[in-house]
Image 1: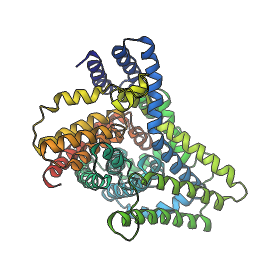
Image 2: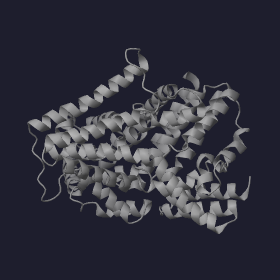
Image 3: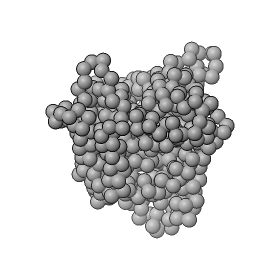
Image 4: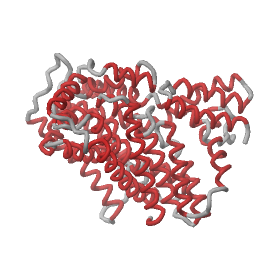
Length: 505
């Protein structure tokens, strides 16, 4: 391997070491991009331009994710103006009777909502409605954050079964139907999630429930967090760890933008229009889900093309935003739509923008993006630094399905270090195709394993520069502590799920 390969790998290792040391990772990613490009090209100007080009490429590739988060957040913001968001979730509060049930309810509700809307946009809604009720009955905020992260950032995002973005990316390289990967990814994510939830329950929930006095104090702290003052130190600490001083402000802003009403702001009193919206919006998405599932498993309706889940959900959410704005205020609905969409865009970039420079550094090692980042001529083949490094050890992987499965899990987790997990899925799909044929394993299963490894790692359970910081900020717990408590349950779940997949799928 060339010096550029070693510089790139050292950069990845430095990112991990920096996280352990609780230091900023964005600046390191920028420096890593510059040095890697400099060593590869031998040109200072190429290295400087690569830093900017990497950000452009990362922003472009991540834009669909940013956009759908923005649209769904805007829709939820419009519903909040009517009080419909409260009515949509409030019936679930009756099931939150003690800490044990609160843990289960939080997990189930987060999973169902995240499967339909993606986890990041629904986090403020969950934190505003269910989290105070869960803490009030004795569930520690850290345990609540664990349940939300495992089911939302882990289980729902790793399968992405409804929108199908992740499986579509994996299928690009594996050359197998995206539906086959999605089915296997769903099973693997469920196994990993159930195991992770069980381990976390035994370690962090069952014996650590709060007594009524402590629970009442914790609930008051969570309510105060909605005013933007409580836990400011925790939020600022999380911001310094991940992306500088603005990270804490972003976490706090998510509450004030889409969470509980701030001081001096009267929450909307739900009325007939709120009831209509609270019923109509879930029904619209339920109908969309039913059509997608019928198309996939029956011949009653045409099958929706692979990768069309996200556009359909995004389009439905956008039209729902317009409809809710019209119902809320027929005179000013045009301005209302614009305001909510602007808030949604701001929320998406506040919570996920820190991923751009880190993803840009990872993209330098992927041949699909490196040519553009390095300013190479059109049609030129860019270096595949990460692929070459993995290919260097590929021949040492025993051609046995079980070894191939765990190798794909490890590769997926390395890919997930970008803080997103999905940009490298075409690469893991290609590797799954090669290893699958050589080891006699199913390429779709191997691609699904890598997809889970990448999504659980970068999607928001193990990497603190991901959307995990949003979970930490909204629950008022340090992001470092949350990531550390998640490590053992998540890794245990992934290992068990991979073993099952290697034998049974």
